[in-house]
Image (cartoon, rainbow, N blue to C red):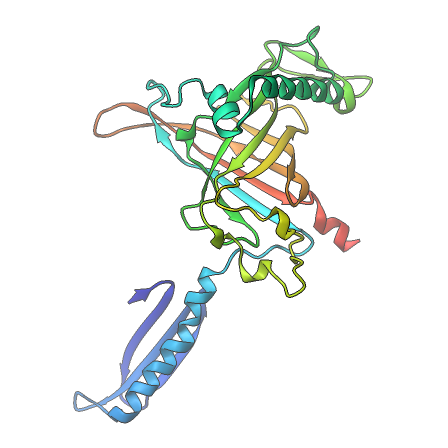
Length: 316
């Protein structure tokens, strides 16, 4: 039988009682072989209870082990993983209405003046990094990602994220090129680099809805009040304070026209430092068997490391 990640297996043998406890495929297990003679157990009752208790206590360590937060890989300060796997009917408008304004105003709490200022910041970044401006590209437009994609943070190393994850809301400003364009700036250089129509650039934020103070594990605390993950207690989120991670395109997001998806790489700026966010988004179209409706199946994976390339620096 299985119980919270622990595998108990019992077998019967004719010679002697044996117990085996260990870890298999990351799961703690206990195997107990009960000697029998004439269909009756040879274990005396007075030994049976302590023996079972000992097995359960040792194997029970698997419960505590499974409940601990994800550890941070060596050389990094923090590792974060988002996944989106929601399913919805694209013909039905989102309940939030205008997703761009929903994100900027309801999620981020921005005023119209704040939104204008964020747009100016985005324009400055796009111009400096890619040489994009109003003379050679469309103006940045506000956007918000449909929450029905159900994007969630499942791993934030050093934090006890529940198995259902924490909801992630995304939005900001983006530029979508309508024709082939040569880019300059710090990315394209003096000679420039040409990208196809449909290439996009983003400047925005992730808002992670932290739902519990249990997000901080013992590994994320220490007697001198300094986290080994370099997360200051002053920036540890509370239920009323979502984690905000800013991101901005490191390179153009060039669409995969064959498989209808994208890969992306962005600079990520979080409370615990600067890193990189990179991943893929390949939404699928699936059919609802009950209604025959074509549904959008979100399919994205986003891995973030802080700092961006730590292990290489550690090895040198």
